[in-house]
Image 1: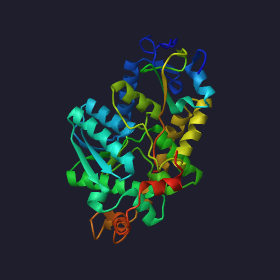
Image 2: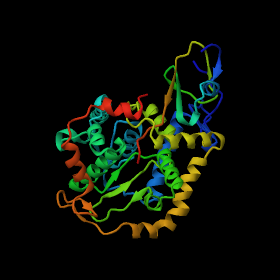
Image 3: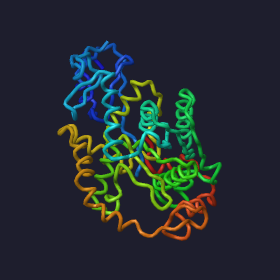
Length: 53
Length: 321
């Protein structure tokens, strides 16, 4: 995605809820205010799981 | 390299995660410490089990079950693993691979049961044979086999990786229907009774985001992909709703569930005892049941007599992602 932005801005742009995801930048876990550069490799990992109980 | 401005609440080192419900950020070391403390608090406050108890951890290859196994072993508990092969196509093959790798790398004892090999059916076939949603026969099969393995192996408790999100979502579903029987049974620990083993959920004070972070920071390789036939189920929808509330009002999820346990579970305790009913041993397998033959044995009869159903046929009904 073009331009620098924070993790929180990225999640908002993708309409993703922070509570449901971890964000990993260049292999390292990062918090919501971490600033991402255009050439960073970012993984947004969903954390929600489970069948019915 | 990402630049982060937030600092760890405990040591002021750069944070790796923000936890709005604690109004705090944490570095890797102190996030792990928080997870350990939350698990120990749950074990202590709810009198789940003691330091000398033998524990059987139900593992699926997902983050929660591997996290709780890892946390218990790290804390010095005697904990073995128990895995059920459900026969859900590639998903089950992958999940077993993660569980076996985890156990082998750490030299832990793992017990496995395969539904198709030992009982002549799998979950897609059971779903088709019973004309019920797959999660129904899956849950029933796992509960029966966890109980059986714990009783047969002389374990003091069955441990599951249910976390705060799981429990809050179940609570929301039960409240939406005011299902008092289910509400009365929704506790972080269930005592052994009438042939059932004790069951405990040490992760009920940790969110899914926290257990996933535990795995990431501890180098635990887990199956990130969700069960393909659970996709779109009501439980996942309830989790999504709660997380949207949490976004606007941090710590709502914890208050919803933990205050229920503190304030409502004692009120419902009498109802729970009355709802338990008379139990006897299943005529076929000996498991506790209210009838002559238990629900699991009836499921085995129905599902094993049915022609095997490929998982793709069940996926088509549940909505492939």
